Length: 308
Image 1 (cartoon, helix red, strand yellow):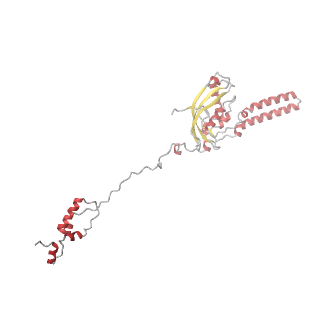
Image 2: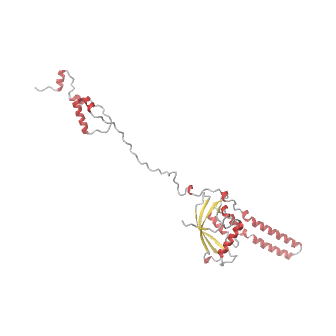
């Protein structure tokens, strides 16, 4: 006779049917701590221990499962921002430019028509007044021929005295540094150079140097330079032609002081086909005055430019 199954034996003895396999499999497994996945082999071993020793023995003998370690956050490499750093300055930034200069400190005397023609008009007025007085006296003495001759001489003298006005009828508009340089040297290209216009186109620093320290010294300096340049190639009344070529400089917009490089080509008027008697490559600094016009900081022949 076959042996009774585990369920029947347990019922006869009054014991709970704890040995039934169905009861073991219906019971829920204890909660497992969250953590990394357990390999399949370890899972099978654990089920064997549960069958043999029960729940209490597994809880005491099983190795404690370490708590789950949070995953280390992956560090992503930040992309560089497209915004430039504070310590970066583009080529045209104001920090690379020349410092701002007060126009009134850089140019103490600005060019005006009255300042340019004032001395000439005074001399012309004195000449005409003198001639008029002499003609009146001669007419009162009934010396008509002498009075007429005096009138002709007076008009000729007035024409000579008005020569500086006739050659400077065009105003020197110097909205750019290049215009200022051209106007300065064009004033030399006459039978009698207009030194006063040149003097008025100079900034404060251009009126004092080792070559001169006053307006009279400035005129003497240029008279000597012109004589040296002419040499024996032209007479004293033959004018020179000063041409500014290949001007190169910074953009003057928003600037108070700039540097310019150019070539000064000097030739004798009427003999330009023979070529220049001098060609000077130089540089010069200019400043903006209170009238928003540009003034030269050097009143001499340009210094040779430095090779970059």
